[in-house]
Amino acid sequence: MIGFDRRDASRTLMSEPAKNFEVIIVGARVAGSATAILLARDGRRVLLIDKDGFPSDRLSTHIVLGGGAKVLERMGMLEMLERAGGVRFERSRTVGPDFDYSGELVRNGADDRGLCLGRVLMDAAMIDAARSFDNVTFRERFRLTDLLIEDDAVVGIRGEDASGVHEFRAPLTIGADGMRSSVAQIASERIDAFGRVDVRCARAYYYAYFEGVARKNLGDELVAEFESAPGAGNLVCRCENGLTVAATAFDASEMQTFRTDLASNLRGYLNRSFAVGKILEGATIAGKVFSSGLLNNTYRNPVTDGAILIGDAGLHVDPLFGQGHSMALMSAWIVGELAREWFSNGRGNAIPVDMLADYTRRRDAELMPYYNASVRTSRELPLDKGSRLAHRTASREQWAADEMIKFSQMLAPRAALSFRFARLMAAASRAA
Image (cartoon, rainbow, N blue to C red; front, side):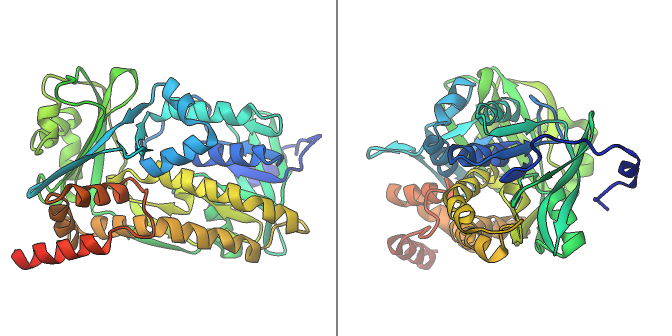
């Protein structure tokens, strides 16, 4: 059980000269640092903590899709991340056994390019931007041990670092601490908050960096593949320092065999692909092979009195579509837009859940179409008939490909596919 460690009782609770904040954010990576930046710009006094030290790596997608890149652009962070080494992918291609379509992400005056950047550089840049604000206090290597709860409301945190045990209070605590969120688990155990629904991912995921990928094989392009083997998927994109990240997804039951020789099996799985194997011809693996392990899609009710969950803590999705970064950034943006009203109208030690409910409504309206698409694909290994038909339809007409790409880039949340697209799907289905 995560909670207050009895060993803490024998330690001295350190006195803090400014222990009260308006917002405490637990987790300082993409979701947490973005939220800290947005709230600090609005004048809030923010405490940002993380159990890790920085810079440091984390197993994660490297992809910020177009919808997430739009948030970074509005925040003024996009150019900074490009200077840190991020590669803007200008084209999206989707390949399968009976479909192959692509589209430009800069067209008709719109720039919908995404970004590919590893976590060491991305997290460090985001945290540096957050801590540049005088009203942001950043504490790394600080471990959350408990939530402060009064009248079933979260009113702060207790944690420890090398200097001892500390308590901090705020009317709003934000859990941005990932799919295994300590904020969510502690609040669930103590006040039955943040109810969750899990859907197991049918696939396992492995990725590595490659060096020496020829430009003639891969430009600044995101390539995603489906069904190169039953239930399999692959992804490849250029990232920082001249490297290319390539990932494979496959039946989770094969994971134990795969682990017997990671590098050789990764190359073997990528080589059986429709396009990725040829893209990586002549390239070599740089460093180790990484695994995300066995995962769930997880939906959590993201609000309770005095606290909310953002990013993977509230909505964690199968990594097959690379949605995690973009969901984190888009949920942070929603908090930034709503927070002023919360603090203007909030009273007492904790912002009440009925005020925070606007966050749930906005998050679910904007992000659940993508989450549901991920759940449909990750629950079973083969692509369902509807998804496969949609991909085949996109191969027929460029305008249809552009609609699919817009949805896959998280740029069209409410009207994923037009009536015109549905008519084309119906015609393709009849023809089949």
